[in-house]
Length: 343
Ligand SMILES: Nc1nc2c(ncn2[C@@H]2O[C@H](COP(=O)(O)OP(=O)(O)OP(=O)(O)O)[C@@H](O)[C@H]2O)c(=O)[nH]1
Ligand SMILES: [Mg+2]
Figure 1 (cartoon, rainbow, N blue to C red):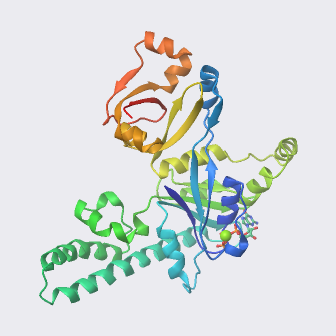
Figure 2: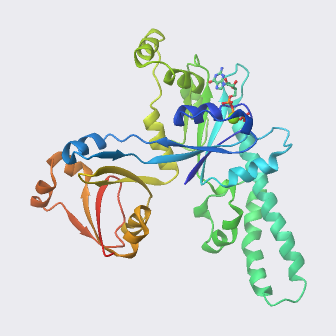
Figure 3: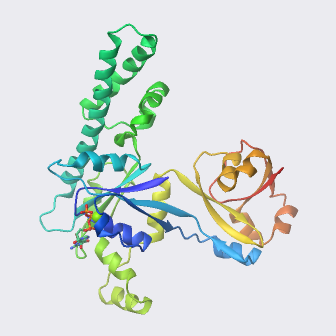
């Protein structure tokens, strides 16, 4: 799933992108989206490697997309919004580093812009349906049903309510899927504060939705990653600052994008994989290879904490901790999976 970094111009998206991916977005391509991967470190990989001594280690990566910032005058926003629609989840970067910044009202107007963009799409469709229904045509009932499903969606957007997927009926979800509605995408907010902003907590507390916002001095964080490790340590202790937990942030982004990590482990490779939360074992197998899903027999499943605690597969078997799971088993965070399949 693509994670879109979005906001108004000049709020720090590209700075965040470079900090997390270590890739500098090309300023010449600033009018279009640029994507890169951010490696997700995992503290369980090292102990697993002590068990398997693999030849290779591969870590899962999140795909981040640096999108062009919206203009506050709305000029030229249509194509920028279209690029944002392609992301599965949004990280809204709000500028809070200037003395006169008002990040909370900025965030509010950004949310309103997303809402208006969705309203425009839905009302456009409604108008076309109303027009079309006047004429006799074979699919008129179907169009009436679509109209009936969309009208309440337009009404609530018109009231300024941003819609979440779980508030829509199945039919409404189906009817709005192709719109890729911005207001339905999970969102996470990063307040881009100045190096010397002290009271970030009270700022964060003003953002609605618990646990979906953090304050980060992005420019400072990026500069820190560009220092040599010793220099960085010196700087951090001289300035009495605390570097942001970058790995923790990547975890949060995994959470908002509704993904978990599972492992495959053997003497060839220890590897982490991303998977949609709630996905089944056969879907996990399909992420690795379509053949594995097609010929799926079962998934030998261990909890990584148990395996790390006991130190070997032999001990796991002796303790009856290796489960044989069928296709529809719902994979859990931290599972170590070995797929048995027919070729
Ligand atoms: N003082 C200060 N300046 C910052 C901070 N973060 C970003 N900036 C500056 O703000 C400007 C814009 O940052 P970018 O990361 O390019 O912003 P952007 O959101 O990608 O901008 P667009 O791509 O134009 O939409 C740059 O000049 C940054 O140096 C910060 O934490 N503190
Ligand atoms: Mg940028």
